[in-house]
Image 1: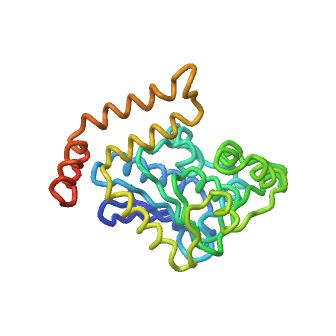
Image 2: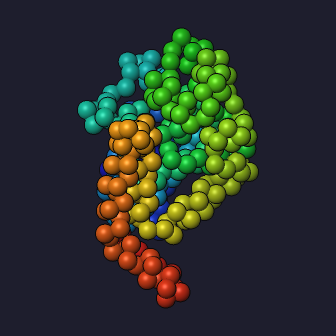
Image 3: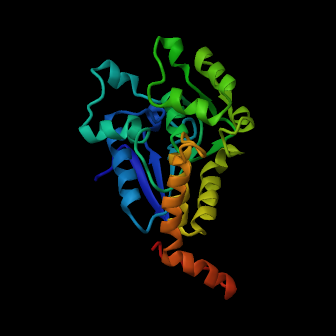
Amino acid sequence: MDYQAIIVEKIGRIAVVTFNRPEAMNAVNSRLWLETGTALKEFNEDPDLWVAILTGAGDRAFSAGADLKEIGAGGFSTTDEMKEWGFAGIVRHHISKPVIAAVNGFALGGGTEIALACDLIVASEKTSFGLPEVKRGLIAGGGGLLRLPRQIPLKVAMRVILTGNPISAEEAKQWGLVNEVVPHDQVLNAAIQLAEEIICNAPLAVKASKEIVYRGLDTSMTFPPEGWSINNEYTSQVFASNDAKEGPRAFAEKRKPNWSGQ
């Protein structure tokens, strides 16, 4: 695809997807939705890419959420695949590999929902998160109402949701919503450093670990033992892989493992 609303860069095994509408505070229009979903699909299918980073162009905003000008002009133009991916091409788009949000500024409404859909969040000290939709007679329909109470304590989430008031990056970190808060000009570098820590590990084991976590979140570990069934399914796959043999072998030989992803 000839990307116009995003920039896609490859840094070794890392894919960096940048929302590239700084003049509109990286608001999500139909083009950005389609391109982001396509880029994430391509990332997910590329065996040479192991971690993705989402960030925004400019120094003001990660994403201001939905493009209200486009909505006011008649709404989003979406294909069936875009609808399956959900808002911004990510909120319902299951990616089997780790995705990091490098939140470099304003991220309210849909911007917060994009970040919530990622596995890890590195935020600028200038960032604020929130779901202000109720202030406009709307609701956070892009997964914010589903994900936020699962990622921070319920009472804290309800305050954010029902008041519509934002929280700072530091408060978000306090509640465990954000992994790291860094100086504004270091957000992307910090996210890349985090990604590099992940890609030191075996890709199959990382993917399987992510699947077990998300598939097991809402399952029982006792009766019925659905959570353990998911755990056993992926554990058996990983332990039968070539990487599972390479890891112990490299340790015994005191060298860095050479992961094949098989």
